[in-house]
Image (cartoon, rainbow, N blue to C red; front, side):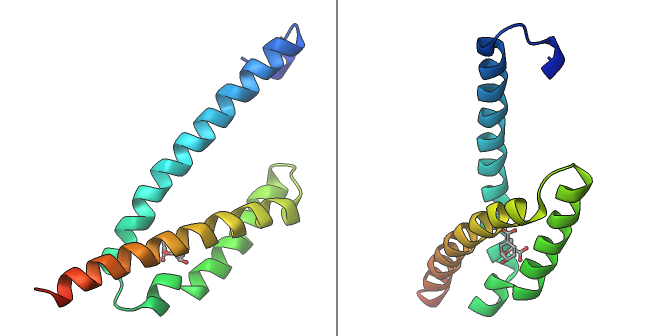
Length: 103
Ligand SMILES: C=C(O[C@@H]1C=C(C(=O)O)C=C[C@H]1O)C(=O)O
């Protein structure tokens, strides 16, 4: 449904809820890839991948601007999200590391 097809506020909210549910589902799917990334890393610096982190934020700023969104706001969302994921990836990496150490 397009925004212009909405006939009431409940139509609007129904679509917003659907979209947000998809967004959360996509974030959960993204999380699976982030955890997998730890398989290809040798140390915690590689897990944090500062260069990739900065390059990603710059790219998402461009995507935001191209989509008519505020680049600072979108960057902040991704910064918070990726910082959360880095913590989770570090946990994943350390778990695998301790399994490797006990082999
Ligand atoms: C997934 C990676 O590891 C970390 C998490 C990232 C993310 O959530 O997109 C990006 C870079 C790293 O900070 C990666 O190196 O690609």
